[in-house]
Length: 500
Image (cartoon, rainbow, N blue to C red; front, side):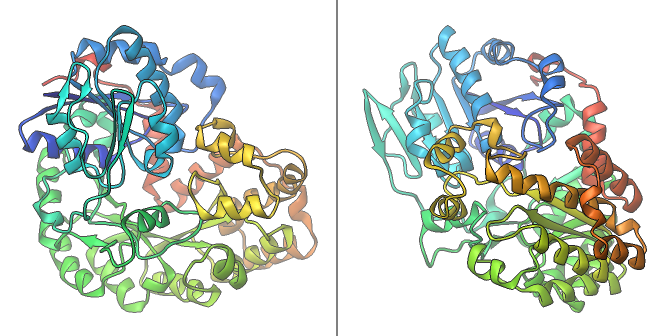
């Protein structure tokens, strides 16, 4: 079977894993990658430029059909869901090809996704084994097999809602992700190798998709699974030989969770890979010992999720382990080990206002992270915080329905009208202040806060993006620099020329 994976706007290790798994089981896979330089799933959209420079869904559908697929498989997050539907509908108008949707958006909203005419099945949660069964049952009219665990299937007007199968626990048994299709089309992406050494997160923060997976698989399931250090190193060695990457990004939700794993990994990475890397950490899983291990391995930057420095918000609204003091200790540990620190901070949380952001700015001016990456809270489908905000009157049922449909007015931007818009207007200058705060001497930062001058700072999406790039240049942060290279880079091949 030939399975075509359309994807848009950013690299997806999940799609690469699915392609590799199908190929290991005897099927052919192709990637139709829409670079979407000014739209997609990066949170830095510029709609005006997207209309002029990005490809339209009909064009992409034609490339898909030129490949003569037996199955079309979309992995969708909320930011790419509408695009995927438009592409699937454009294909369906011309030819009926069995089509399956997976990814977190389909997992969070299975009923609404499967109700779409162009969708024949959805895969919930981990997709490898369920997708393989669906592909092997694909025929002209859809998927012949309807009792596929982890999948919901439409057949003759009936929907078969199947239970999930257990998590894949032996990650070492899986093939390494297939990156060649993407790198051939966008060679610039091969300079910065993205890898996962684990799957899952132990926490159930209310704004994050992980609590959706916890609910789907149930209590007691092994929500966090990890590859062995030697397996991770083998992938990196092979990839370095093939593409000679210059940097590595570990996209694990919490790379530093297991100290024993880090103790085995650090010397192997330094000896056999030997390029700089960055990773994500959580304050409760970060201390002096972990920081020293990362530094010994060659970690140049650690991203620490702080999100809020209000202990009550962390505990009651976000259901997030760790408190203000644990964030302080984590930042200090990284700095003492000589690792640059980027903290992630959420704006417009329910219960927080300008005073909360002023307190956060004071905290960051004291702890001096190298970068403060601030993001506006997005109420993603199925998340607990969305229901909480509705119950508090911050958003409506209509807003939640629009979010579920993938309405791009609710993504990566200032989202809601009325009083919420007024509140956000007062918060916008703080995003600019967080962008420039790491550059300011402590006394100057304190003076700006004490005299209320933050409210006079300009703010715009373009200014914020420009400051993010300046910060990335200042500290050598690869992700934002890679985004610039990606936007300016040229494709080596067109959609239809990435066959082998």
